[in-house]
Length: 415
Ligand SMILES: Cc1ncc(COP(=O)(O)O)c(C=O)c1O
Image (cartoon, rainbow, N blue to C red):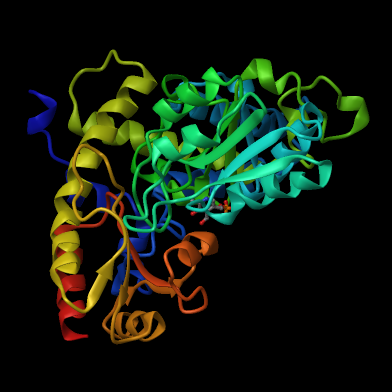
């Protein structure tokens, strides 16, 4: 059967997430996924098992400790396979903000006064603020500005900023407000022509399909595991040869123990081990939809990504069409998803009501969403939106259904 004929079995998907049968959360139509997703039972089971039988310091020689360490290592290896990296290229810590902060400190020794770092104003502040702080070293920070007419980052504008002084370019793979998917592979190629490093923020991208970091050829890439169906952790990928040359952010005597040296305090053990459950969930999704068994983990992810994208496109396009056609609503970003050019992270404002009022009215109708600047305050400022009131953001993932979207459209009509 060709992949085009395989559609995501939404009933199967929903059955994997206990939140859909939980007495509290099942009452809600959940559309704040870009803030943090639900978790499948596999993750909860691993967390529970770790806390029940192996909640001891890992890597000692007694059984509980050995198994704890093995599960933590297994999680790292599986995630490396899923994003096409090596296990020693993965750092798991508390959040993406923390990973970016640590990375900017670990890499700053390569910079000298007069060097240039490029950041955008479309990104979440996590991938801007830490880089901007490097100005204290005498480094010039340049801003790749979005086009205020369409909220997009134009590659021609980046080309004008690049020079042989550029050392780092940090850019989002997908904005948590605009939703557009930036052509990170092409951006990486252009940045590398100038001998600079490229740092990708995949936080808003990864929930819609785990990236292939080698194919993107990014030097660093970060995403938040609590938005990809896991616990509150962040994952940072870095090319091994570059990680080897970063400065140690952990204890002095751990020098050389890469990538552990890129994590000042070590990961949360039980949460790290529970990531095995994310792999299992995707593996089960694959087995449920496809019959071919002899495929690599990455190939399974490719195939799942495709059916997830098709599903998201199908459910999000009617919503985009409704919002875009309504005279009182201003949609931010592209008005249609085609060929994975946009994530179903849909932000908008009303002409005649505050975002706070609209979000509250949606909540009153059982739609779990919110208004905010979502820490992309430079993006909102560039678009002329009040950063206090912010935008209303409705963010879908693959476990959302057509029914959810119909409910949202009806609720918006009522408002
Ligand atoms: C695009 C984007 N980047 C970075 C972050 C920061 O992630 P974390 O909460 O893991 O620090 C977020 C969080 O919402 C985000 O949406």
